[in-house]
Length: 372
Image 1 (cartoon, rainbow, N blue to C red):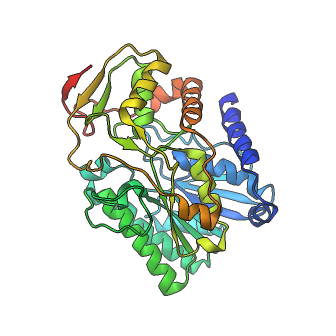
Image 2: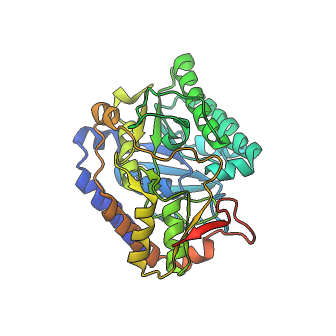
């Protein structure tokens, strides 16, 4: 229970640091809010923040099928009195009827068939969840008169293979290399359709490389939790490529900030925003930091770059989000990394139980080319 309290304290301290204005606090107070994918890495932090904002008169409904972890355990959902967890799927009419019976006025749609490699391995399931499930949720939102529909898109996915940096929202490319990327682009298009055709107040939020407390390592998970997991286990860290590749790693609570503001500001409706740190970190630098902090003596191992991984660098422009919704990242990379390491140590027994690295060759890691 103490680990849950620490997680809640971290979110509370972030909200204090954020200093949301009185109008925004009043806007969220007493609301009923639906978060799909609320048991995931980003969603589990978002629902804690929303729980504090909606207060005793409000309610946060979580719809999640727990597909992202090996054992169906909603352990990531803080047991707060105004959070209602529903084990269900966005593709299921029965499950959607259950949560819309609560009459949510705001929806944060974070549920997805996550990860590029996962979508390459299972393209039909990926399309079913991320497109059909998405349309079904939009229909319920339209019929239910929802006041705001905030969609979790992906800046890492939709910008294609040949972007100019920093990435700006108006850049469009069809050079998409995985079903996940295609589906996220399609998801934005359907949001735009429902906005223009039905006046559904949508916002597309493009996430960049989230990290922080709440993400369990696994075959299809992100590089930071996997590196930390392997390093604690004293295993080599595999880098797919040269290690000079960069990513715009964004602390999870900064993404939560962006979501909260996208759910509030009128200027956000009908728009798309990059939510990122606006800074580059190389994968080699990341691996070195992980090994130093965990005292991992194993070498870094370099493997072939995955066929779909065509972006040697990622860096987002956050100027539009700053201008229209006053988005300002608060957590520097090393500070956020320390929070993540602490969360791993606090929850290590549970993480070891839930980490999903099935036997055999991992789809996401190739045969080593060389090590150092």
